[in-house]
Amino acid sequence: MTSKTIRHTYAAAGVDIDAAARAKALIGKQAKTTHRPEVLSGIGFFGGLFELKGYEQPVLVSSVDGVGTKLKIAAAMGKHDTIGIDLVNHCVNDILTSGAEPLFFLDYIAMGKLAPEQVAAIATGLAQACREVGCALIGGETAEMPGLYAGEDYDLVGFIIGVVEKGRIIRGLTIKARDAVIGLPSSGLHTNGYSLVRKVFDADEFKKRFSELGRTMGEELLEPHRCYYHQLKPLLSRIKGMAHITGGGLVDNIPRVLPEGVGVRLDRKTWMVPPVFKLIQDRGNVDAAEMYRVFNMGIGMVLICAPDDVSELMGKLPEAKVIGEVVKRAGEARVVID
Image (cartoon, rainbow, N blue to C red; front, side, top):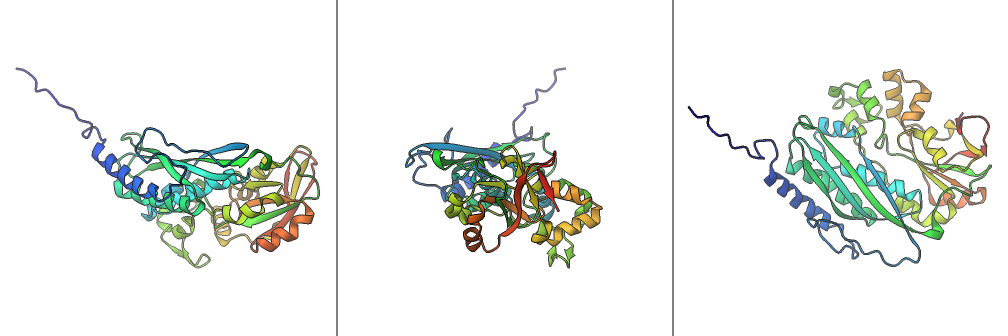
């Protein structure tokens, strides 16, 4: 008796090539709306082509990041059209700290089971955020990996390339004691601290309305990561250093732009901490020091400038607050929050 030969297919193994083709077509449609004249290839070629021109001493500035477990909130709420905004804005802010203009962006989307409509929703957010800052969505990768991602789990990663003239790079090298520290407000958690939030709140509470927030917890947590590019682009010549307040909070991110020998002293009474952070702290019994290392606590971007430039910056940034000053370093701590 002979055994019947089994014919294996990729689809039976969990990978739908036709779904991948549909997803890529939907992404391509969105990506096309972001293209600049410098883009020489469309979505689908093996490499994205971008012609760099118009600069005398161009320095490319790159960054890569993900959205983290904010994706779990998006899945719980069934809302995926803003998560791409988070990703682009996070990356744009990162390279902005060097004074860079965003040029082009690439994304990586990986799922256990490819859902073209869900991918299209993600791409809508990516394209919207790219258009708003003049950044071309030039390519990426969409991967279906059954067995690696369970259920509706997926991952989203972004890669950005920007450019700045060599003589205009912002690196914080001239920062000194008595310089002012200015904070720009965040729009909430941005893209950090969600693993702790998911420990503090049960998943069924994401759809619960909280009076302190004026909306559901899920809506609050999905508020898109704020982009500071258009606000700060005209003011870069007045700024000595910038810190994007992401993972590690104010405590870990500000030192990344400080030269040796100095630290900063911040006055927490100078800005209002949004209610969501108090909810998290109270519900989770989280120590204040832990909160300031995990979350941005209402400050999404920190600027450091000379005292003489404070008035001009504050006049053109109506939401900004002077939250502290640069001091001579004393001891191990480089950021002291009073």
